[in-house]
Length: 153
Image (cartoon, rainbow, N blue to C red; front, side, top):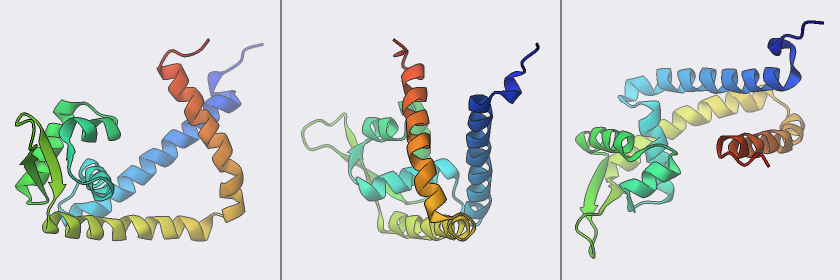
């Protein structure tokens, strides 16, 4: 008997998660465009809103990207006046990334867009269904991370 990968339940779940992520990202990118903002920039603004005045390295780690990519994103945010790089008081090599007032406003504008999408999804998906799905998704996330990290023993 010939078994197709596409028929495997686990594989189908992963495909659906990827599809959800892709459609969400495209929706957000389309609606952030009028704000002259990209999806990665919004992700950084969200992180800075929670943990302001952190290093570019810490920001890259939180965003699960490399420092070069984070430098490019921060350069674009700084050009827009949304962040400042402040020299660390004890180590001049370290720059702390801080949201400006203009950056806080951009974050709020971006959040409004994100909330519109979330509220649409809330109207279409039962809370009880989400509560049931969450533990399974968390387990899939843990297992996928372990696989990525080579912790399969």
